[in-house]
Amino acid sequence: MFEGNPFPGLRPFEFDENYLFFGREEQVTQLLQRLGNTRFLAVVGASGSGKSSLVRAGLLPELHGGTMTSTSIAWELSIMRPGGDPLTKLAQALVESNLFGDVNEENVLQTRATLSRSGLGLIEAYRQSDIEEGSNLLLLVDQFEEIFRFRQSGDKTGQEASHFIQLLLETARQTDFPIFIILTMRSDFLGDCAEFKGLAEAVNEGEYLIPRLNRKQRARAIEGPVKVGGAEISPRLKQQLLNDIGDDPDQLPILQHALMRMWDYWLN
Ligand SMILES: Nc1ncnc2c1ncn2[C@@H]1O[C@H](COP(=O)(O)OP(=O)(O)O)[C@@H](O)[C@H]1O
Ligand SMILES: [Mg+2]
Image 1 (tube, rainbow, N blue to C red):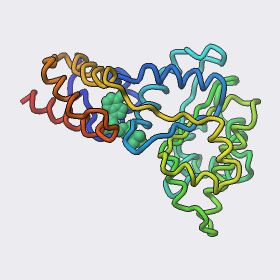
Image 2 (cartoon, protein in one colour):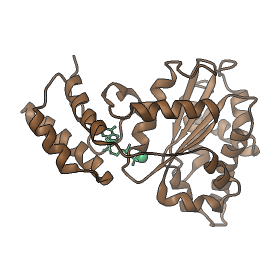
Image 3 (cartoon, rainbow, N blue to C red):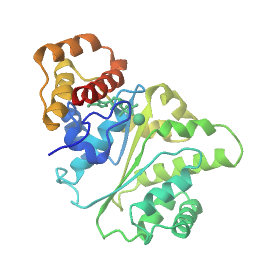
């Protein structure tokens, strides 16, 4: 039996919350198909449109299902946000996926050194890792737009941002090693991609613009978790919620927050 609140509120759905994640079935299928043809995908949309949730709770758990028949079944996942130090964050994500022995500071530093050495650093890291031969590696760079904070700053952080992007692009360019890259990025930063050589081109080739949930999908996003939580929602309340949010895509976090609060209220 499920215990707790099946609605995450303002935060995104996480990888282990796939069973609470509803309304995005079609988009997950589309993304899986895309990933069968390309190894670089940029999931783009407004802030709060559901990018992180779609990839973390929708797409990634499905990879293990082996739906992507054209590639090997084994997947290693590394998830990061670039923050102020993308190379360290990448090294940490790889080490935390248990690809480089024990999870400790020394292995993070060593992996970071491998990544820094050349533009092929991510491929080199894959080669040196404990990853089983032929296994896929998927790197999710969530909130990729954080990288643009350092644009044009000629200093060390600016160079590191360029190097990080070069690592991603060089990896996407090759097919010898099964490394897949997914970015999520706010659409208002799309124009900034042109500031890094090759990035705009890569994003053009692998862009996925996230659609808003339609009314039917929004209904599923309400009913689904209620059911998993072992409860029921009256048709009238559901209609009221759907009418109140309407078609405004900015309302998804608000709906989610309202549902979370309502659940707590019901419990008491
Ligand atoms: N399929 C969904 N059903 C219900 N709520 C969702 C769904 N996808 C996202 N949300 C909610 O919408 C808000 C924004 O989602 P998030 O994934 O963080 O968007 P983004 O990464 O685009 O900013 C969060 O409150 C999240 O819980
Ligand atoms: Mg996000």
